[in-house]
Figure 1 (tube, helix red, strand yellow):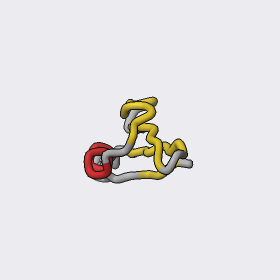
Figure 2: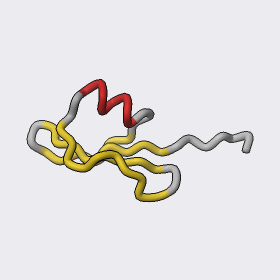
Figure 3: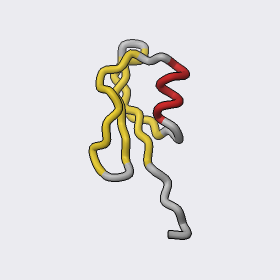
Figure 4: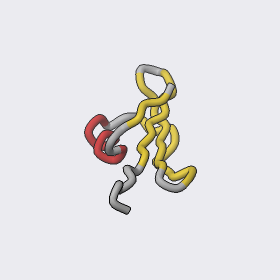
Length: 54
């Protein structure tokens, strides 16, 4: 299961989740982390927002 977040670092700090994999960037403009929540592995994902003016 995965959840998209606006600010990955903020949510990790706010909730103090148990990390299974520290935040990393598998591709440009994407960051992910794996957490354990209620015994289940969960993927958290953040997509860098593109500036529509660029």
